[in-house]
Length: 474
Ligand code: FES
Image (cartoon, rainbow, N blue to C red; front, top):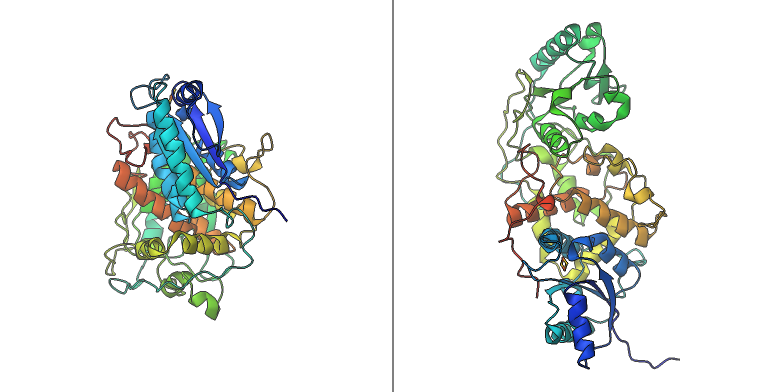
């Protein structure tokens, strides 16, 4: 039996020009410091992708340190300023998922600051040593039960009252005219599905088929996902039916150059809220978990949670508006009740949160339905499908599931508009909606940015300000 004392393994990602040179200076001066850090040199902190951090933890690191040039000193002018923004969001994500923030640390260390490097390494090592080994890491959790969270109380009880008859007529008239005048090649809207209370996407290419279109409280799908699908775009100019929330994802696609404004005709609908039916009766145990909140909210025939505090009943952007009687006839909640769930999770200890999310992600079967339905997941080759290098283990193990869900969430940070399509289609009922909302909240607090409202705005993680917050950096 080995009696070797445990020592933390810390991976340090450092920029070549400042921190690496600073560490080199410390070595040249024969300064002593903790030997726990494995240093990986990269050109700039702007090149230190958060994916590297995920991989380090996945491969067994007890802690990660990221270090580079002070603001203003970056040898690529602003790499560290972009990086500061990314880390601001990424560390909030990891913390929300239950990684103790002391395990992921940041510093600015210049080439002249060998002494500071020694100090940083010693302090970080001591903190991680005090935390102990990261043995609840990317590993099997043996069916750890999520802790109990009391469901949040709603500010008011909503009533799903949407009479959409004339909205349907308005929609059909707009689609018919657009197709007759050949202003669009296809209208993507909703038609009745084969099951009662279900609508499915409809692709209308002939004016005489416009009467297939419907608008009612079951029109849940975010149809903007088809604006990046070649099967649709190759037909020509696309008319797309958009609720207020969906229109925000169209703004995102235009902002990210995935759709050209002149190639899209937005047919806005006034929406009083859509319904989401519960897929299956929930068991007693689940009622005791965080999911209780959603179960209580998402009673069959009632509004989707995203509609409770909706403030975009009329889309902020449209070319044609199908006006009708889909008026808002219900009181609104003061805020999205899921923020109360997020707050409840944040009140837990990191270990409890970690156990909660591990239990959630353990259910993931890697069907990628969340990716398929997301309008903002449009990469031709998703990182989950890349094999050189293979960023994410492909099998549905705890290790791979956690990494996949972290990557997915991070890629949507500052971009997700909260349409909830991912959590709607998830067969395992994973609370992706909570993660997306938490990140949207973090981005709003840190950068004052809300996704999907301003086509001309730079996406928040693709820009920076000199006065961005960075108190978490040593
Ligand atoms: Fe050091 Fe950019 S070169 S942070």
